[in-house]
Length: 484
Image 1 (tube, rainbow, N blue to C red):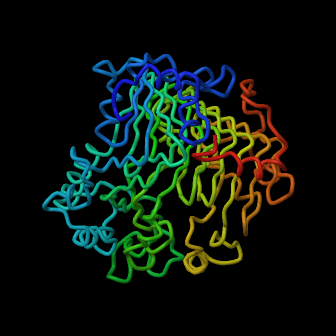
Image 2 (cartoon, one colour):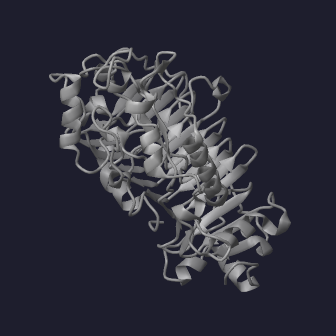
Image 3 (tube, rainbow, N blue to C red):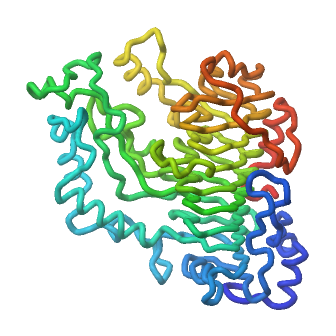
């Protein structure tokens, strides 16, 4: 049935885990909890205790939002079954909303680009770099436009909730599920998340900016159009939305989901500024993370998910300065496939992260060649781009992180073990049994300054690790929506 309480017979089928099977779909028990020892979120049971009246089948945004309130008490256990495709960027009549529907009357992208172009904005530095706080009517109009979109496409998930896809084709598209502070005990399974598209990304002129004098005309002080800080490399577009944001939430299990940018990947939106601001990473980014875990979130397990064709996949911990995250941000990644991802698989600050039996595939073509200078590498990256994100790093070893890696498999075309992990402020990292391009991963040689003593050892194994050599076939067979 559609949105609403289930019949007694339907509820009985749900309890027996038979409803999906009767529909010709993979067997999925929507009441299934995460078993007691399966990673950091062990024992999370979501809506498994829901009474019959709080088991819903939803097929559009309005029904999903109503179901999350569980008859006026959002804390009640609830099971929400997703049927077909739910577009979150729609009005109350389920009509899709586009950029023109959210845009403030004063916003114009082309005018925005002209106003904040490095040739205009970067001629004067503030504290040694271009002013990162954009000012003026066009930035104000962009912010108002972004707020209009955010109010519509960000859906707050409530505690004690299981959201499960029916069959093989359940999708949630063009929006962001938010598991915020105070929300606990959430299960999300068997859903394809697609195209969490930000229509109004912001330009940050100081992000990754550097007074690199190897670039022609780059220097701190403005002289003329060809000489000054506007000729230095740097600046990035930043977007707002993840497919799933665990933003302060706790006890979250994400299982057998697929994450993709759909038919609007960021490669369709190339850099808009000329050299030296035309690097691959200066594309007009419309997608942020796929699953980010930030702001004191904790106790998260991700199993058998498929992350596809996306750059910044999973950020754990949003800032080195957010020291209140210490002791939190603990997560387990098991049996996931990072296919043609670029980086952040995951990128970790503060948290204890257990990663085992995951499969990483990508292409490092375009990464810097030590035999070339920075300008040559700049041009090389553009020339050698394969139309998919450049595999820059698997693990990001950030401030006070403690990553424990076991029996993972990396298949990095045109890359080596040096690309499997990157030091980003961290001091320790442990790996045992992983493989890179068919050979044992020698992380100790690639990361000689890191301590292997991460200060903890995992004890919560939902399944014991399989040998790394068996990971590719195993993960391909099991990871993603529709493979339960």
